[in-house]
Amino acid sequence: MQSYQVIGLMSGSSMDGVDLACCEFSYKDSNWEYKIIAAETIPYDEKWRVRLSQLYKQPIDLYAKTDAFYGRYLGILIKNFIQKHQIKPQLVASHGHTIFHQPLAGFTAQIGDGAAISAMCGLPVVNGFRSMDLAFGGQGAPLVPVGDKFLFPNEEACLNLGGIANISFLKDGKLKAFDISPCNIVMNRIARWLGHSFDAEGRIAATGEVDPILLNELEQLDFYQINKAKSLGREWINAEFWPIIKKYQDTSEEEKMATIAEHIALRIAAVLNENQINKVLVTGGGTFNSNLIKLIQSKTKAQLVLPDEMTIHFKEALIFAFLGVLRIRNEENVWSEVTGSKTNHIGGALWGNFKDII
Image 1 (cartoon, rainbow, N blue to C red):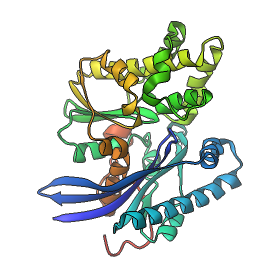
Image 2: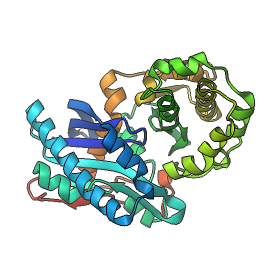
Image 3: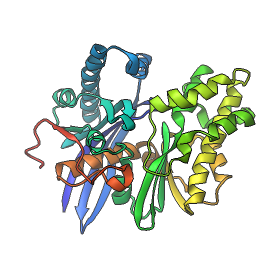
Image 4: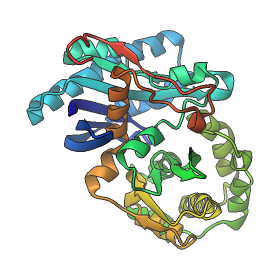
């Protein structure tokens, strides 16, 4: 039996913080097993949140500087995490924080310099998981479905309610996966307008009335008509989604939140219903938005299954840790049937000394 202990690092588009999960993976009888040994989320302070959210429009030298400084910051977080939990990981697999994602233009960028991370924490690092897929003509996303297939093989479908809602499921023997709609990334922004970091349990949305005209306009967005591999990024949200929201100046923030929650629920339910999904595992921060969960459930007969809190919080960090394991084993960790690239391939750049684990 082969086993690996890996720290998975994830910073999502909802920008609530950095997820760290130390995970153990074992390969036995052609099957993968896992357990999360230790995990926590380190919230961003306001300085980091603003810097990351505004970096896409800053000068190139500030981008390069932030890439290096953010890598050092992540490395320090990892070092402190190891000391706090008294763990002995072999490597780090870091998703980084996405600043640009423009697959149609052929590029994506996740900051968090791998060399800086490795130097600060003293461990070898795998990062840059998405770049090779863009080079092969793919979307660079979603990558999590590979982990869904190997680590959650008994689940009919897996739905993640993060900054962006995405799903993976088997259909006609093939793995299908794609981004569905914006999720926490837009609800968190409305919440901040009202002085909250997020809409706890969906209470803001629950107090508002749905604006049917705004809802109809959101439902007509072209992205929802695409039937091939597709992914969303902050650029699309800023260019296509927010201009619609901002037009409705007479609609209160509570009504906007209620309308956005209704829209997200409709989009997710449509995917579940169109693909005749009977049961779906739901993870991500949006899982704790009870109002959103109720809205989705009211629009579909699919059973929404909520796992333990550790899985809900840290499934993406877990899976990027697993993608790191596949990378050092020189096994394919990105599949063309999911991303639309020309071929299956091995994604991820290596930093540091891997001689003791490869």
